[in-house]
Image 1: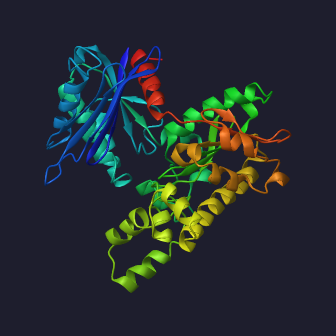
Image 2: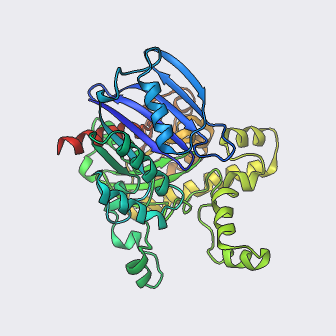
Amino acid sequence: MKILVLNSGSSSLKYQLIDSETEDILAKGLAERIGAAGGGGRIKHECVANGKAEMDVDMADHAQAIDHVFGFLTDPKVGAVKSVDEISAVGHRVLHGGEKFVQPTLVNEEVVLEIEKLSDLGPLHNPANAKGIRACMKLMPNVPQVAVFDTAFHATMPDYAYTYALPYKYYQEYGIRRYGFHGTSHRFVTGRALKMLETMNVDSSKSRIITCHLGNGSSMAAVVGGKVMDTSMGVTPAEGLMMGTRSGDIDPAILPYLGKKLGATAEDLDDLINKKSGLLGVSGVSSDMRDVENAANEGNKRAKLALEIFVYRIRKYIGAYIAAMGGLDAIVFTGGIGENSTTIRARVCEDMEFLGIKIDPDKNNTLKGQADISKNGSKVRILLIPTNEERVIARETVQVVAGD
């Protein structure tokens, strides 16, 4: 089966065409500036077998974007299929599933309406996700569409981990609780980690793993026996770790205080904690960890402070999760920063020998791809596992379509 995986943003569309039997990527690409008032849309496409292509084209909506994507996928020169009919199913990444969607779900009109209703909890992503689904339903009416939810892997959290200490009626009436995100990534690396730990004589059913998805958006999860016990993001992706432009954990009273001082609206404050904070806000340099690391190495004090905060938050969550799980078998690093920043990995694990965490400097600096970068004698395995969210979405789409 050939599975098309779509990740629809408010003005962008990422896609991969995957052979479900080999899990090879046949083609991938990105459509940008969908619906932009001034036009300037662009599609970048790559077919593994036939090369790359780019096109400047205005796209009024996601339906037009997907139509152009289909054009690339079936193009005689750079296409991966002769006809769209060769695509067996479409897997859609959807940010927020609330409490209703805790498994990948076959899409129909009722499901799309529910995804749209959940836009209150995922206002930046769910409307765009729904647009992508509707566009595909229109262009491919006879092809199964499957929604795979970012929140679903975290649905195993116990109530004492997901409930906020607010009046309980707000959970009952508005669904205010911890949901967690990056679920497909945490699911993928957890599965890989469990297989690696089995070769080290760790019982999977009793395993205790901390997964660290570190990128422009960052989150951690405490996973016991393959099931999430706790995770750092909350109702929205703004809670938890310091991120590229998100603040992560802050005193909530800061927001009304700043609102009064600045005469700011709720939308202004939302923009502040989601788009102007994090690495960018503290360093004043960039939201990109590579830029911040370079600036810190050149002596920029605010960039150094940003790195210290970023690392400190991760270390603090590790300590909290070890206490919550009653021990630890492995730490997993993944995501753009987790996979590529040897400095961040080293600093996170520094001076943690008292917890049985010992990183091997040589392995950390030289090994790429999936690897164990623990030092000999480390009681806790430190694992480097590249994530592959699209592969998870493709797998789960096949399972739903097959009725497994």
